[in-house]
Image 1: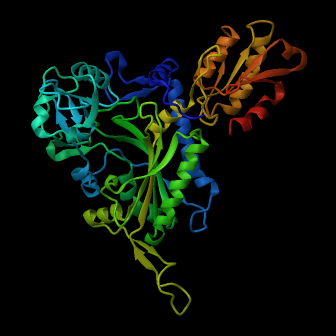
Image 2: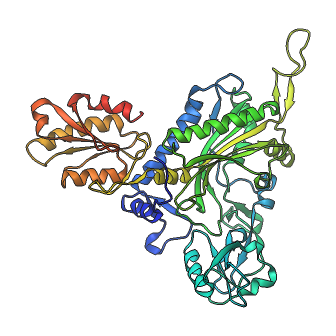
Image 3: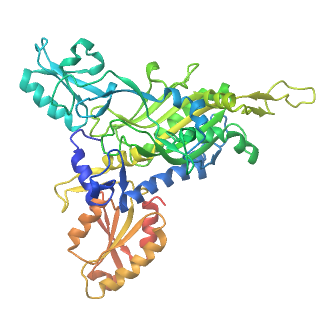
Length: 520
């Protein structure tokens, strides 16, 4: 289904809490900004997405699709530490370049990313000496400051704070401030979380929580080559936590300080890098479509030259796979980037570590008289498809959220069956007349088959309509109901979540009926 800007993020967040998808971290203590916990259904949904990626990337790369070289794609897994040697971040450029310009509010002590702050100004004229009302888009400050600005001037327009001349800054009212002129000059702020290694650590023992999983794969490149029979072109895949000390985490789980990445570092010969870049860009877009983001709310966008990261060079490009979230509509938010990182990472780690990270390819180079090749040494180029697991879960929830006033519950989640946290629910129509015993037996059969991929529910209480409604909200694709007819002809009613249609299926054929529909 197509995304609509009319979808309410407040309703989606309320459903996520009510049905146990996402909770505010440390909620009983007031929460902690930028951190979220996954409840029972959310943890399983996240696991299902992670495992779908793992199966399709590592265990059966690209579904057996051949790469640009006509050969099956090769991927090996890795699991590297969250804390790496501090020199890793010097070599990668994070120690120097992983900074955002920040402004502080002297009154409230709040800190804002400079390029995220916008200002309501009068649509016409200068507004005299009245304040310029600053806000951060997508936060409560936006509507609060808009009301103040419209009361002051009537008609308003929005400009970025970066465009406001410094001589006008004494008139700027910071997002949560009471007095104007409280914003400081912007200064660089490193986004890596600092920690210390050792029980009696000093400043000489500073380390950092990784801001990305990629660098662990680069520094283990040589060990992977030496310990396996893998040959270039090949990829290393990893799923893991990363941490960024975001100044203004916002929009639910979209911009968090602790998040999980699903990354591939694909190593190839420089001559073939652009072909592999296009291959991964197109396959990753198709993969997201295949698991439920098939609407026009998904797009592929090539980054402009001024957006490219510090590692981009020699025409290397980056594409963003983006989803139209309710809080970005009509715009889009990134869920995955596919980047041609060139040879930046291996070359810089080779330089800083003084360890050779070249690859010797015996099948390339000058052809010798005996028919063999002289071989070629080179630093591979890297194509990096880097997906946000948490952002992927959020996109799936937003896409799946549907309102249907004709149903017992007007809210439901049309999650792809492969990812749904509850695969099947089994009910007796009423809790008597032998129906609970029959449903218990069917439940055990279904659970034995499908519980490794998600929950199988058995619920004997409440009216059947309420039980269906509860499963619709949880995104369960199929409900099986034992009723009075079951004892007569050994059939069961199977209800389809998406359509509400019901079908009679033989009791001993339920598992076989459901297996292909669940995509398992």
